[in-house]
Image (cartoon, rainbow, N blue to C red; front, side, top):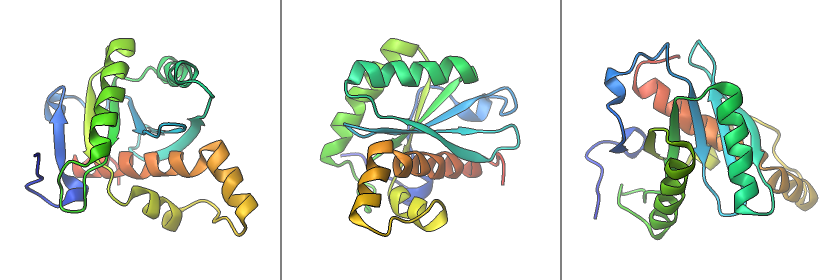
Length: 169
């Protein structure tokens, strides 16, 4: 079992590259909040501020990967920052295996380095920090359908990643 040695929000799970050796100015980050039906996406500007992008919400996984690929190409992404669903104690959960399969497919399709970061409480933080809270069941369904909440969560995890490395705010 993997266990974090630091606070879960700053835990570094796995490195594909040594991020500390990368020039942050030259890097283009894509934050990813994986879900089996929706994939939240985010991007950081040159000042190190993360913001949500439209989520990949297509019916099939291949179509979602195509949406992700379009963002990677459009933004000229150099590093993927993928949320990793550890428990609040910092241990692997059942969903970690699913995210590992998704990460392997990202690597196969796009050949980019992936940094896995603890995504604990990012969805709740996304609700608290930004966006419009749904007031009705219909609004919640609409936000779920569009992946708006998922992309806000991807922005939170990307901003946490950047902050933990001294990039941005």
